[in-house]
Image 1 (cartoon, rainbow, N blue to C red):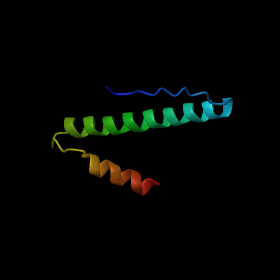
Image 2: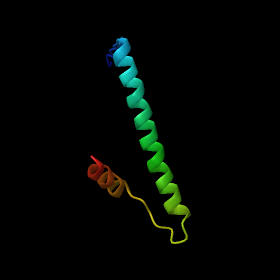
Image 3: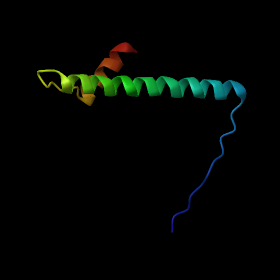
Length: 62
């Protein structure tokens, strides 16, 4: 039998705003990476955009 713990998240208004902004940033990042993969696949050369390549681009941007 596995025990499950549930932790309620009760952020302050500042934390809630920061979490919302972080979620929006992550959504935009994910959707941008997905669009890059789609564009690479639809290109005539059928190139691929691999995870490692996209991850390296993120590391350069930081």
